[in-house]
Image (cartoon, rainbow, N blue to C red; front, side, top):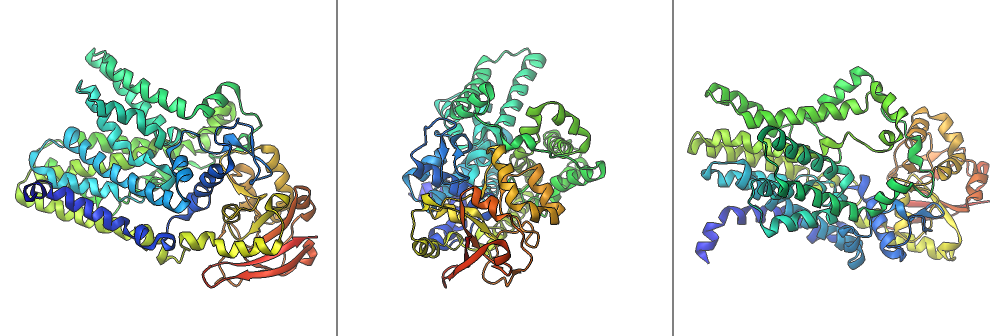
Length: 557
């Protein structure tokens, strides 16, 4: 036993630190603080509603009545999504904790296997490999992504084994199973495209027709097409409705703004693929390149990885440049599918670069290896500082339980006293996901795809407020993913807790349009000072000590 502990001491320490990172979720449970943006405000509720709907395998046009008077089934995740089945088998909170645990452990062992077997050649770099793998495992991942980012190292590990003609059953299992727990359109479409280019390079440059490697790429692509069968059907036969994405009009950056976006993406990354590389990883990488040349070495592999990172930053930024607008206007597919997402591979690339940079120091002996471990320690501190519990507690975000406040909304439901199916609600100053989570049927929503006709109908409600605020008007008209009750005074802010003393004195809604869609009640997180002018009657104010919200319940008259 002692011999085993001694042999795997580094791995045990890495796992212990990883468990420490995860511990707030297990200790605090519902009082843990987690990401709200593109998480609690959307994906968590999507999985819950679909799990409860009984329409997991329903046709694409089958309505989910809880959202926008019948959100088409195609708008919600695949029936073969592992994330969905977690939510079917467990409560949303338990599913969330299990997901975060699996993501991070697979990221840890996947990166460790990749570096050890394919990237780092020095035998004495085991501690450094474990350290970099730990850093990769505690990145601030986008929770609904599953293995979209966290699974990239283990998949690359499997592909490189197959490419080297050393395949094992585990490599094929990885390739087959990961598609059920990751997103094709966000990262693996681009990853597999690159794998295809690698295979083509081998054919053209090495004259190596590695059919097993080609088969592995085709196999994973095929499994993704099965998992995303609804996407395949709509690509071949079209959607059963005209999507709001047809009005997407993104990409109007000036050349100067595009250059700034390149720098921003290179230094800070993107909200869904945060790498936290600015303070340690980037300086260490630059220093390692300089040191290598000083020691008369040419770090070809490190330079190659950095070149790819820069190319992806450029491609990402220029996708939003006004000069490429003509392409999106000409070909509708380019307007609705985001081809800029090569940068979703950045976390994988940055931490491969980090490992390659540290290996340059490790070759200088014990002192170099000690320096590498110190630098890894600094990066671990950087990443612990953005642990969701610390990050969101610092900025006073609500916890998981506080965000949804089920007891508060149960009181509202009991006060209304009718079956939620029989009326529709919408929210001001609070995400509609809160009402959806608590069983209300909402006219407002956040979704990636829904009927354009509904977007236009809903716009009539908020048209007077949009007319006051050009930013909100552009935001809604050129994107519209958030079909919210936008208010000029509130802007793009949707979490007005009871600590905010905001009063809307000049609200201007088309309440008749609201009623035409079936709207009966408005849940407002702020007081409406001119409610009567908007044909709204305040029924009651709801608040609880355990909830951050003060909900003003208004009835449309």
